[in-house]
Amino acid sequence: MAFWIGVAQDVVANLLTAAIVAVVVTLAVAVGFSASPRRLWRRLFPRRPDHRVLVAKTAPAVGATPKFRNRTPFKCPVSPHEQEALVRFYALMNGSDPFDGRCVRLDRLAPEAEVSEVGFFDLLATNLTAYSDNIATPGLWLRFSAVRQWISLVPVLQQVRQAAKTGGDRLRSVEEALANPHMANVTAVSVLVMDSNRKAAIVQRQSRLAVSSGQFGTTAAGTVSDKDLSAGDPFLGAARRELYEETGIEPESLEFEALVLPVQKMQPIFLYTAHMTKPWQAMASLLEQATDFHRETAHMFLLGIDDPKAIASFLATARITDAAAYHIWLAAKRAAGEHALVSAWRSVRPWSVFLRTERYLDLLSPKSN
Image (cartoon, rainbow, N blue to C red):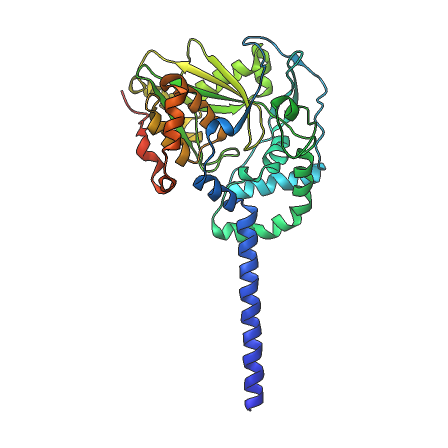
């Protein structure tokens, strides 16, 4: 009898040990593939916004029409079946339902800008897959359920990430990144709106969007679609369209700031700024009429651009896209001066990351008058 009791105890002990090992391994894999450790490191030791992007030395002239190429030089590094699997995995991780619309790819800048058409799924399967920080951090149960799917995609993920390193492990310029035929390089725009009180509108995006889910961003942002090609300058046209769709605002002019590639996803993004003659409270009623405001925006906040300490603290603590952080940094540098802004950044304390980001912002209600 004692013998069988001992055998039973050994079996139970072995089963418990195996279960504990399985849980630990699964948890480690689940945490690892979601890039959570890297995100935590970035929050504890944030990089200055101007060190988080590559800035193009040249950019297409505002209003100029780029040369359109009927045949794109883009060569997807994975098969259509593998791309479909990557898109399903990406959608599972951030709970989105992406649509494969036609987008504008920036092929080159010099001697003249050239563009072509690619699909939105090409972006999800290349630029966003190659840089794992773009994959949303889901709940723990979803991580467990996605482990099996992730394991089956490991060779495909490695293939894409290897293709992203064509020309070296570290990209040194926008032009070098655009020369890689294996990245979709779908062009995007970012618009920052400043009101008459020098308040910039900052949005927190909805949590189930295909790109930058749940992150802080500028007033409006989005990809350049094939429909924008009819505007002559498709980048300026996309900026105006996105701003109107997301805020209802139609500015008299947009000021081009820069063409950047954020290290977060190495996607070319055109930055524009709109200076309004009214305070945001007088324009807030337009938000309710905007077709995409509630679909894409969870909250909208106002940030005083003249306060370098508030700007530095917000950018160091917020989960914000690299392009938006640089865009706000540019506006603050122009308003307060680079020396004051850099000094404020250096004064940010490590424990600030545990404070609520919203303490530096004022909530804007769409129903303000």
